[in-house]
Amino acid sequence: MNDHSNNYTDTSFNLYQAYSYTLLLQVEASTFSYAVVNGNRLLVSAQNCDLDELAHPKQLSELLTATYKNVIIGMPAVALTLVPKPLFNEEFIAEFARLLDVKENEKVFAQTLDDQNIIIYKTKDELVAAVEKFNLQNTVYTAQGWVKAIANSNPPDSNLYVEVGKDNVQFLYFSAGKLRFYNAFEYKNEDELAYFTSFVAEELKLKPQQTTLVLSGDIAVGDKNMKRLGDFYPKIEINGLKILELPGQIPSHKFLALAALSLCGSSEEH
Image 1 (cartoon, rainbow, N blue to C red):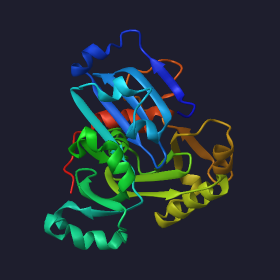
Image 2 (image 1 turned 45 degrees about the vertical axis):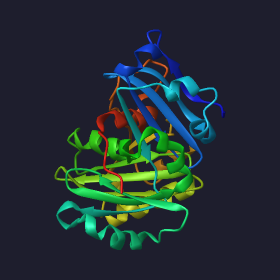
Image 3 (image 1 turned 90 degrees about the vertical axis):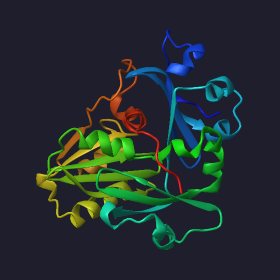
Image 4 (image 1 turned 180 degrees about the horizontal axis):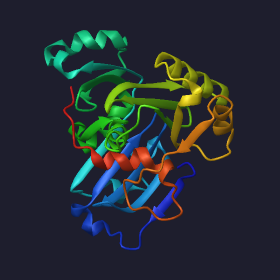
């Protein structure tokens, strides 16, 4: 196992009560994070665990093999496209998938992203294999909860939402309360993070002086990523949304995308 970040175990956590708990799993290319919740109360969690522990659990064997009331799994994308619901037809999933240049070692999912959009995305077979035992009907696109949480917060047109991962960044923008833009990019350093942020803002015709970046994920006030973004955007905020009751040692913005999976139900897998 890698060193976990934001480890937490509530004193009331009891695996014998798993039948009343929900297990949240957030899968990345080489790591995963998990949380067990009871209602909106966090019971146990860890982030940045080695993916092999999910596929072949040892230290987490009891936790990952317990029988839970619900399991929700956030799956990442190698590539994706959004299709408005009125234009989506299951019969044409193969046609949509051609846009993603699907390889032999990749699997395609078509799932609901929000009230108006279906997301079609591909992910690696090895990641699918790691979660098959939990039932693929329990998978959702990794950002579905994050999108839903922000949509429920009445986002203003001046906000550009940014979820910063270790090597992946996601952007979300709402206009007049409706999702106008979502995409994700791989980045290597703070300069590339700033570049993709500027690229997205320019595509949306958002002027830096009039735009507030609302950040969550793997970022902290004063770190190199935030400082670099501050060179271009004078208005930056840490996302203050709280989905679950969290202990003081876990910053809610670092836990937002994982916690927001609790807002999702299962989605049909294709």
